[in-house]
Image 1 (cartoon, helix red, strand yellow):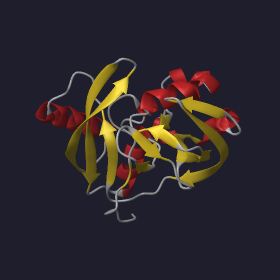
Image 2: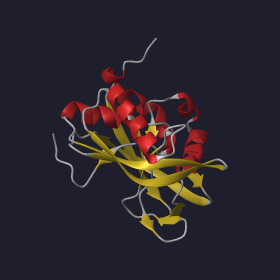
Image 3: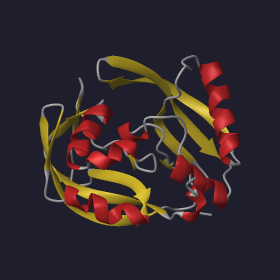
Image 4: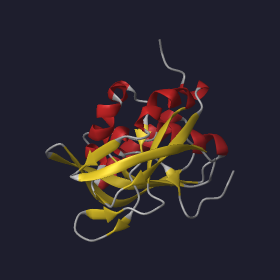
Length: 204
């Protein structure tokens, strides 16, 4: 049976973190560690994991702060199944992270969104990537103006995958929520294609 994405209410579930550092390129390692606690996440395309925010320390590490969170974007019906993360300790790239009590953050309808990195299989050059991203935007029914930021790479196991930062503005209320719920590209479990408000966002 096809899943009606529009019938699901998505939100962010933000778990407090304790720890010192995390690798800058931590998407795959974080996903692998989370999936050991939540093995069902492998097959759930409705769940995305945000990149963890921290202070860049140079080299390949981020320093965690009191504001750092492990954030899962998911349908509200999935909340009970992921609460078992609370109280666990995850090892991510050689660093240990304590997972605390989560809070619910509803998605906000805003005019401009960004994703730190979007990856689309088979598209690595900016012009081709932009065209592929636009096709996905249109297929989702998202009305907005899409542009690329800097080219970035993401480590997945022993490979480097090419992607781009992506910005979408001029969003109406429905398109803003839909883009946050569905994202663009693949590897949303690894922090790719997860959209958040930009500093220039206006509430809708």
